[in-house]
Amino acid sequence: MLNKLLALCALMVSSAQAGYLGAAPAAAYSSYTLGHSPAYAAPTYAAPAYAAPVAHAALPAFPAIHAAPVAPVAPVAVKAAHAVDYVAYPKYQFNYGVADGHTGDHKSQQEVRDGDVVKGSYTVAEPDGTIRTVHYTADDHSGFNAVVTRSGHAAHPSAPVVKAVAAPVVHAAPVVHAAPAYAAPAYAYGHGLGGYHG
View 1 (cartoon, helix red, strand yellow):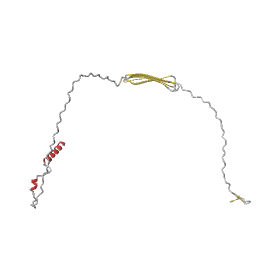
View 2 (tube, one colour; view 1 turned 180 degrees about the vertical axis):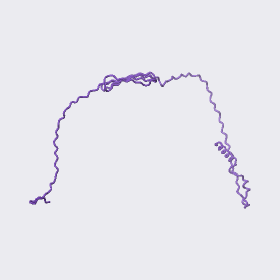
View 3 (cartoon, helix red, strand yellow; view 1 turned 120 degrees about the horizontal axis):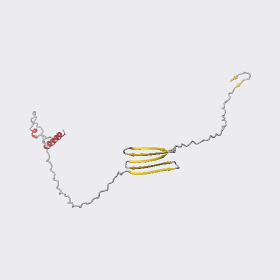
View 4 (cartoon, rainbow, N blue to C red; view 1 turned 90 degrees about the horizontal axis):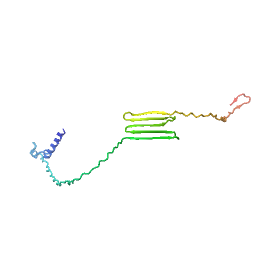
């Protein structure tokens, strides 16, 4: 479909350039007259004048550039770079320990690695006085395995003995409240009347 559309556009452009589109021959209109008025002639149309294509000046010829001949060079001995293995073979051994009598912090660790096989152990002093020891191994075949043991006897400190001391008895002074102030009503007692007179 796209090819047909492009072919049609090309045909229209070439027809326009040849003068087939946009103008009718002048002779067809100049001889036509209206039937009722022979004196009236239809306007004549002239074909549009197209300018001849402009001839472009030829580009100047540039001289061919050739590379200078290369003189043969004696071969140079190149020393091969030393191959660097950025992923070195893992092999190490370490150990450390802490024994602080002031804080009671006692622990140690040792580990050996040769390739993908790791073996080691560590110890930790527990709060109850026992020592926890963990022996571990790790490799590609078995994964990580650990064995935990405890040594020593658990010693729980006894609760401190508190002597009961009787607190001294303090007697508080009695609280005295002021009596409320009342105004006594004025009563009038009559003599000999035997009753209240208000």
